[in-house]
Image (cartoon, rainbow, N blue to C red; front, top):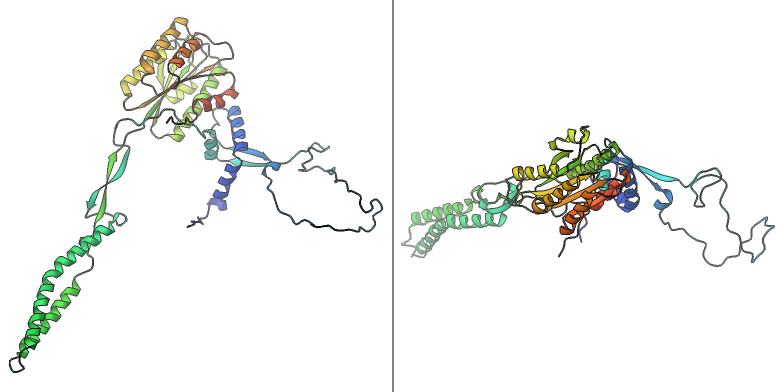
Length: 427
């Protein structure tokens, strides 16, 4: 068995390998701290690192020590309390503060904790660990952005890294045979003529002819040796060509209710949910586009800045947003070429007849083209007509429609992980 040891120096004299092992070992503690950090952070500092503390007792490791062993009799000078055969009491905890296992001391100090800081990349790794876009499929050929190099025969030109050794040696061997064949034939004829001339009677021999044949044989042997073993003409290279691959492009529609019934607290929770979604897609997928849609009585496609920070408000007609999403899909994102996702956040307040319209839009037009639809309702109160109509949609499309309720900011991260957790592929 071969072992490869990476002895490259780490940046700033730190051991990246040991750090990664440490993170893997205490993953449970770190994930708990990350979840707490996500719940208490504001929108603007969601991407920074995090300081994590682990109880010192949890990072202690077992050690081997030499014990006394055997049966021994010990005489202690100055002993006035014990006699042979007495059992010694276990010593109690000291009165001083410190990191003892006996719990907090009378000075109010407890068990020490080991603290360290996660970098931004490590923090986001733990935030989005085990998450994915559900039902992502390979779509038809869209453009030539996504290609894969494949073998396409042999070429006379190329880089040394792609040299085909076997084919080059075969070409060199064939060239040597072709170039040496006439020389070898002439050499054989000259050697036969020399043998015939030397086999004659000494009186009939022609010394000049013998000298001429020897010179010819020497010249032919030099020509044989001059034929190179391999020449640049013999070199052959593996030819690679870029072959278009099925695209896994995806578009995520972020739909947020900004009506008057959505309080500032509700909007902040919705923004934090969509910011988590934005960071998740930006970090894990290269071919994902984001479309931001805000709605009250009317829906409008906006940019990222306006989506998160605009203060527009009004009444509520949810179907206007779904209608706009349907128009955008028809205009820019053919389902045969794109994976389509929708994430909607609302407080559930909507006209009853419009909730029925939303259900019809989803069942008849959208769900057949979408990979996944998520709906989060931000409200501590009882559900209204929109939730009930969406339940009918979820019953008809159980694998591609998910809905959850968020009551407070602490529910955002658990709900997000539940909506986008990695699904086990069905056999």
